Structures are given as C-alpha cells and as structure tokens.
Image: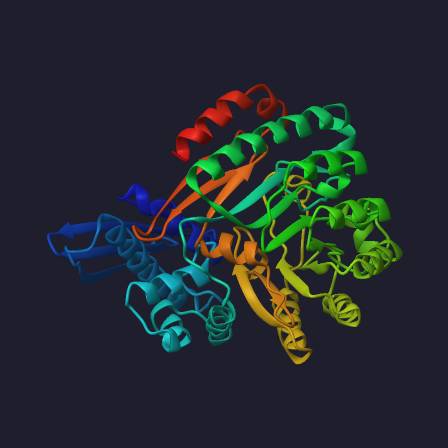
Length: 465
C-alpha cells in the first residue's frame, strides 16, 4: 500500500500500486512544495529493509490550478512507477497511467501544446512508460476519431434502462433482474418519459442539437414490444446516430426490431461475449449460439449497423476458445466489434464468491484480437480502462468501413455534453472553451428514481440553466 501526506494523491497512487499485485511492500510518500519547486520523497519498505528516493521538478506558476493538479498527479505516478518497476523487475502495459481514458490524456496533451500529434506514441513510451504496442494503439485510435466535433451546442442523449433478463456473474452495474422488478417496469417507463419531456424543454430553450442517442443499460431489449414503442414514441429527435443496446440475443424479436427501425434506430448491439455455450451457461447467460445467429440475421435484414461485444478472460476460457470466438465473429463480419478485458468488480457475483480467474492467457487473447481484427480490415476507434481488469489491460472498440459509434467516442473523449435520462444516468456538461466538465448524476435505483423524479427534473433544469 501507499501512504501519502497529500489526500488528493492517495487514491491514484494506490491504484497504480495495486496494478503491481504485491502485498508485502509499503511505500510512504511525502510531497514538499517550495514555491516553484515540488519534491516527492518516497520510502520503499520491504521485510524491514528501507530504501529512500527523492525527485524534484519545477512547477510553472502560470498554470491554472487544474493544470497544476494534473501535473502533480502525473509526476508523482511516474516516479512511483519507476521505483516499483525497478525494485520488482516488472513492467505494466500501460506504464504509470491509471485513468479510464488514455486517449483523452493524449488528446489533452496535444490540445495544451505539450506534444505534437505525430509524437503521441513516442512520448507515451518515453514519459509514461507505456508499452510500445499500447502507445501505438493510442496513436492509431486518435487518427481514427475523425468524427469529433467540438461544439457546445451539440449534445448526445443517453437513456438508461437498468434491467436485465438475468445477472451475469461478472456484472457490477446497478441493474435489476426482470423477474424482480417486472411490476415496476411500466411506471419506470412512465417516469423516464416524464424526464424526456423535461429534457425536450431544456434542449429547446438552450437551442441544442441532438447529435446522437444511445439507449443502454442494462438490456433495453428486455422491454416488451409495447413498452419499447411507448418509450421510442417520445424520443422524436433527428440524430446522426441512434443506438439501442440489445445485448442479450434471447430478448430480440422481429416485432421489437421492426419497432426500432420504425422509430429511426440506426445501430444496435448484439453481445455474444463468447461463442462457447459452456461458458455462457457458467456466466449466467441463457442464450444459445443459435439465438445469436438468428438475431444477427434479423438485424442484417433490417439494415442495422451491428456491434458485437466479447470478453477476454472469462472464467474457464483459455486462449484456444477465445481464438475460436474471434474467428467466428469474423465470419459474421459485424460493423463493430468491441473486445473487453474481464474486470473483477466489487459487487459482482464472481468477486463476491471469491471466483478465481486465470489471467495467464489474457494478454495473448487481447493481442490475438487486435492483430487478427487488423488483418481483416478492422481498425480501433475508442478505448477505455476499468479498475481490476485482468493484467491491467483495456477495452477497445473496432470498426470497419467507416462505421464508428459517435456516442462512444464523444463519451470516452468527453468532447460533447451528454444529457442523461433514467435511473443512474449521469449528465455531463462540457465547456470546450473553458476546458471544464461538470457532472450531474440521477439517483441510482429504480424505486428512488420514480419517487424523486420531480426533484431530479428540478436539478437537471438548474444544471442546464
């Protein structure tokens, strides 16, 4: 563990320390601020033996408080990484980076004039100890994000349906199983519609233009055809892109897909996670491969852009099974493929039951997916990381033939305002000129959301004043 005299640095230092997966070491950190110089002192303690380290760097006092804080975090993590890496003889694929958005960090450095776009990979390797492969991945993603438009009047709309048919063992999302909330779904949809109508007034008052819509969860396609139709009747904007997650193939029907198409939905997600049916049963997904293939054929017949999600490192899966899954996905050739690394999240059944997962092959799985998808015409277009991911890896979205998901890029790069609707949705207001972002979360649980909707709307109207 790391003990720091600066509370605002403690969390990220421990996040980095935990990635090294050691329990017999203590690092004590002291930051000393002397006008325009910052000194970081470290004491590395193992088995009663202690080593001391000291690093000093200049602080530009003309920087804003936000930039100063960012620089302090960056420098202290780089220094801690160097100490741990040298003493443990271990490197991490993402070096000293601990945040969710490595690509946003690189983009911010370009925007602030700290590096040129053609030097992204070189600087991530040199200054942040990122591996060559991951540094090149970031540079490639930045080149592929051509759809970014920084305009404070462009907004994305996110609607959350936090309900699933069953709960997967790896899931920690605040999402309810349908059997437990079936009698609450109609009133939840009524409440979401009430919030949507309030959002319409905000959009009109602020002269916003809705660029993309994303209905996620949860599994929105768990709703009945009638419920879906009632909800989508109220989402009457004309976005460039309209996505609905239909993650569980066993929830997809011809009637529901027709409703989506009739309401202007352009993109859906059908998420196998794996094509190994033994694994599907193990992780709590009742769908069969025939359900996935049937749903996909129905989606193609209606000309939807289709994304498929897969997870590397699922319980019981080795490299060979994962390779077969990726190869099967390539035979189907969806527009988007998203490859996740399993995250052992607190609150998931897998974590709570002390589920053991072998991460021996997971880095090879991720490398195989990246290399094989590239050979077949797919390119990476967005990336994010989560805590507790196996081997400290990442999630990457791939596209072919220009079919990137605008919402995924906007939300991960934080370039546009997002208006969040529904339980546990978060609104994010982006001020591009000021380089600031403000957030306004809705309450987390369905029951609270229904009971407090008037308060939620009042707060949202104030937030978007």
